[in-house]
Length: 421
Ligand SMILES: Cc1cc2nc3c(=O)[nH]c(=O)nc-3n(C[C@H](O)[C@H](O)[C@H](O)COP(=O)(O)OP(=O)(O)OC[C@H]3O[C@@H](n4cnc5c(N)ncnc54)[C@H](O)[C@@H]3O)c2cc1C
Image (cartoon, rainbow, N blue to C red; front, side, top):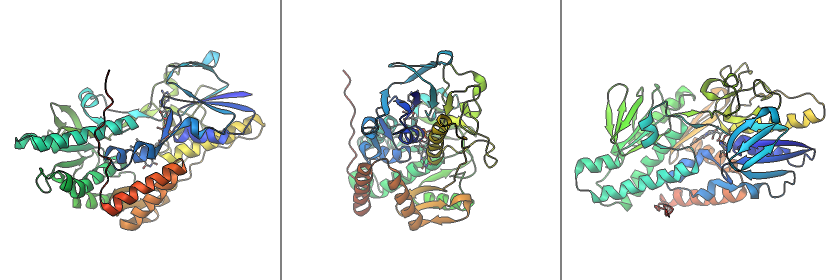
């Protein structure tokens, strides 16, 4: 039996693992630093208290329960000794025939140390919980302080990064300001909350990779909801609760949400020639890492520029990761059977972003058709619900969404911090 070790059980890794299930000439070990798979596109709903963590995550061991040739191993990647086909983890070492990197990407602060230390990222479940606690804590403090300037600073939120994450969290915070904040925080003056909500981006549009129509619709919807959208503004520093921009402007804010950048991980044991732009591992059309026969990389972690349509690599999207995981599974079986390998071709299924209640934008593949408003919002809900990993997650998420939609409220806004011993 050939041993495949997959590092990372996100969209790419879990789809590869699932497709290898039942392929009894392989033994598969899925390694992850967490013991659960989670759904990053809905993290912002954890951060804003609209969903619970269990709605968007699921334990690996339960996912793999009936898959006899696939096993889970908790641990964090440390390094590889490729000459010995050995990977060293925080929890031991594993011998492999094939090693697959499916680790996704990490946060990128572009070398800004103060931003790294003080901004709040949104990449993991822990980040989302930390952000939720922080947001709620600032609101409570704002109800107590008497100094006007201090209250304004506590309530000011700057979201850096106008991609889907930045747009979605800004929209949800604005919606919350209109409905929930007005009811739960009577100490705050009417509309005060929404007047201090900023979305900033270095480019000239929000949702830059989407169509021009989506840029316009999203911008219009956000500003109508009370978000101040500032474009062509690049964060340069964040010191003493002041966000400093490269054009010299500043905003005093207790909260800087960092949704502005990602970068690949550097793996100890992989030479620098194997990395491309953004530290992504360079792979060929079969996702084989440059310079190695039995190392592969899939999903956000890899840079594959072999497709004519994507000379700079694929967009870092869930669909790319899912499709690469599935294609690699096909190729492992083909390799074993001496069949021809299938080169990876990305099937674009379009892109979408939700902005608020009954407001979203959807571009169909190739930007051929554009939807907005209620229909786009409904499409977004439908696609995201179906994309969740288990029927349990789909049912509980649907329930929480239904409650939020009909009551214009949710009751998941508890500040919970694990006690420190
Ligand atoms: C907030 C947010 C919103 C997004 N919204 C959308 C969206 O609306 N639509 C869309 O298409 N895409 C969206 N994306 C992008 C999408 O989530 C990624 O493209 C996708 O997750 C990539 O899948 P992956 O398997 O490569 O990596 P991931 O899904 O990130 O999985 C990586 C896995 O590797 C594990 N891991 C990482 N490092 C190590 C290590 N050293 N050792 C062990 N395990 C490790 C992690 O725990 C994780 O389980 C969003 C991303 C974020 C962060």
